[in-house]
Image 1 (tube, helix red, strand yellow):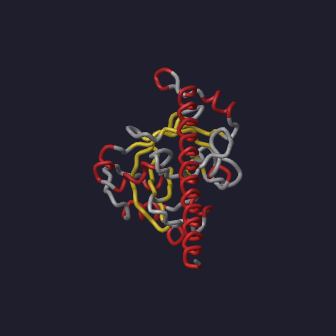
Image 2: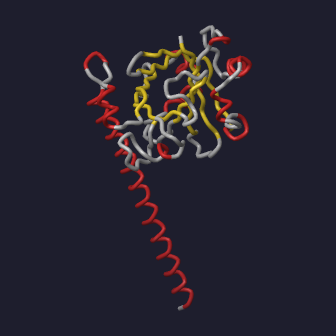
Image 3: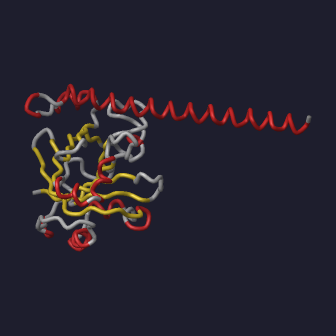
Length: 235
């Protein structure tokens, strides 16, 4: 009898765990869908005929709006925001409501006008291929061959960047030693990124005058410190 009761208790416990797990999966899927719907709706109202970006409307929706980012021939096409910390937009969408997908955002220590020698831009990697998920495809040579531009549409100008370096790193050990230092990079830093790129891009970078943007996302294997990094230079 005791053995039977013990088995019943174990079965009930397993059942509760299974139900909880299913609920979490459904909840996460729902939250992911909310992100897809949010950014699809923003694209629908913000991108007008011939690709014109309605910056005034985007700024009205969110005063933290800075620019629209697009990687040519990819699904990465999002508004970019910046606030006073790097935590808020990890878990909040462009409408500032809670969103598991977060937003694409500029590091809080950077100048919002991309005037730093290096402007760092973050975004999540999501299971549904949204946000910065496609950055992982830069670990594939064929993707690098066909995706070599990043375009930033600001209210006053269109900034076109050529990708010159892509790699995967341990963020704790190799990159985030000093965020402020990353905004004021040296010529040697740029040379190092060119040499350590996993793919050799054809662009010739003028190291002494280069203005760089750095796109960063987490990896898909759940490692909390690994990151995919893409560097592009203004031309």
